[in-house]
Length: 540
Image (tube, rainbow, N blue to C red):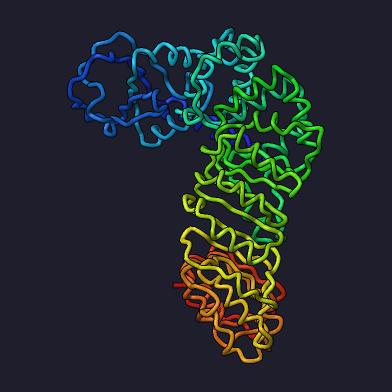
């Protein structure tokens, strides 16, 4: 009985697949147009696109500027047709989206100069292992098409990438490098995931270790002076994020010896990374030794980097000079420096980074007067956002009156990640207030110790419209709870909330449910004082 049922299910699946094969198909016509015809556009058809290879985009006809060509009165015999998914063995999201829209036919117009290569591209995709020879120029154009039509990165795709690499790159590496040197390559015209697949395929032929590839390109675990759970969660890499990291001396040394000291592989690496856009790059230079020429490493890095994070010891701070010399800092939008403490050299090198959108300085330890020195750097005014993370608590027991913050920089923000012990005895609260950090604090970890909770007034310490992260340890508070938690609703930007040694109450939960911007909440060492009345919690 079970066998017959299974047989019937398999037959049903087969019939569905056969039905989809004939019904859910899309007829695609690629039509070349002449560049010299410029009458007005009057087409109102749905499913009509223009392939703009200058921008590497498929433009819907309704989005085309009127300065482009007319598509309604063109006579041409340059037409190539395919039926998707019957003809190409690769899957493309663009065509699937048109099938979902219930289109039976679409038309894609393009310049006649682009027609020959795209026709060749679709002919290649009619059968696997059909690539016999391929010019370097066609190789890079095909990579553009994979991006434009949003290829699905499955097993057949990986096999196709492997064939591309064998026939174009590996078959005659020197010729490939010579021909490719003539091209003006732009990373914006490609999908970095496709380029990363090309790199990994090349590495396989050079027998580069799989562990190196996995750790370098598929993990992203930068150092952190903070060992909090939200930090680790935050660093989980998004699915489509392209990252690269060297947090281990072995892998940095392996990269240097096996890639950069091989002349041909090094040149291929540098060429391909010209079209690789890296979302996150992390290098720990505290592991550096004299066997590695840092200039060679910097000279081989990708030119297009969104966020560059690096760990620098005081002894190798001159690396920042070389970073300016060899890396294209103008293209880096976000730079993060992990520093064990501040120094005069940092102040001298920070002007290199005045074209950044965001500069993050994470200090293991820093003094208030050193923050004052950073605040007084006028060259940093061009940076849109400067974030200083203090991992260890600042000294609030002894205040030096000559070092106070002005509190007037609109682009400067401070995260006090080291637990701050404030009490109504001694000078800790008074000293902290005189530092004038209030206008800069966006994150803070507090452990209050007040005999009178009326003295624990967060409005004295924080700006409600700035705080995004709050950590409260109520170990020293009687009964491990505050009389009122309504102050939380005034934090307009609060997204991360961490409670330690707290007594959970229904009143607290009601307030937390009303915090619209809260993305993360963590309770550590908590107790429940009363039964949770879930039916009485107002979720709206």
